[in-house]
Amino acid sequence: MDLIMSNEEYESIKTFISNKLEEANVSKIYINELFETYNNPNSSINDYNSIELRISKNIFNINNTNFNYEKSNNKINEFIKNEINNLICTKSIEYRQERINFIQFFDKVVPIISAAVAAKFGTTSSLCTGLVSLLLVSVFKVGRNAWCRYYGDNSKAKDAEK
Image (cartoon, rainbow, N blue to C red; front, side, top):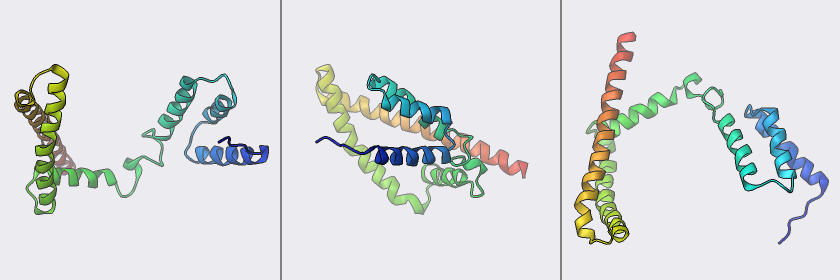
């Protein structure tokens, strides 16, 4: 199916996209380059990906006030950190079911990964199960311990500053 639109429709869409990108603090240079790329029949997929990546990086720049949680009044990232800490570093009742679900999920994932690894290396999955389980538990435990230690140290430092 061919999509054909009038010049007026195209300009209307182009204006709408330009306005939305400007609202997101995207550089006008990037906006012009975007339309030049899409209007050029010789543009390659790499050209499209390049300008889209630069625009995405510009939109999601940490200093962009539309996405900078540090500058917001709610400091939502602090609330998220508190909830993650509550989930993985404590035995709170609030996240009890999520921890149970994670263990059940883990019990289902290990055999699947083991079978895939066994197929790749031409061995039996029973030989891989212990190794995969040990690896996943180690990665989770190291990540959990690092998070809890870092978060705990930073929480104490923030409390001392107050």
